[in-house]
Image 1 (cartoon, one colour):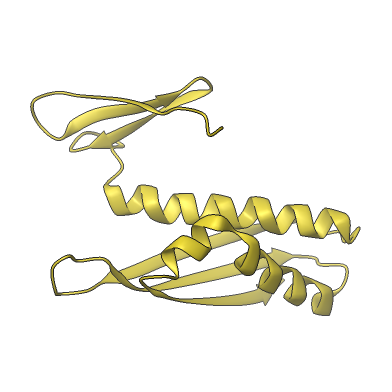
Image 2 (cartoon, rainbow, N blue to C red; image 1 turned 180 degrees about the vertical axis):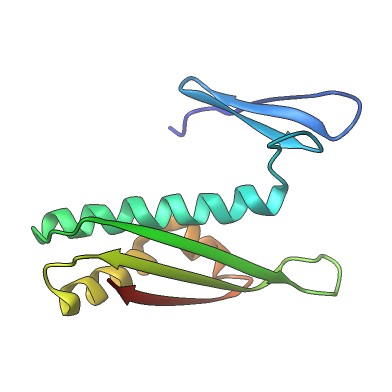
Amino acid sequence: MVEPVKMSFTNEFVGEMSVESGVVRIGDQENGMRPYNLLLGALGSCFYSTFLDIVKKKRLTFDGATLEISGTKRQEVPTTLDSVQMKMVIKNPSNKAQFDRSVELGTRYCSIHETISKVATIVTTVEYI
């Protein structure tokens, strides 16, 4: 079962989303996340978690990674995502070819990536430093 999410809002677009482990501000407030921020964040966190599982199984090592995720929406209603760009930078990878494969597998097995890919083209690039 997926941990339930609780949300509360004012009579404006100001609210909070909470789970047992934390709270995220939503909407038109300081540090408030917008719906597509949350969606792209869900994509990134799902992908990275899946990627880490694969890397650990392969016993690969690295010093960390960053993800930058952006998207464009369609003009037609409903304005779903049209395209998504995921840029990953991996620091000090032990085996670049195996990391390339791990990124590919991560995109394939991440359930949120699979869901979004039904409506949008997702392009993932990887850089190494």
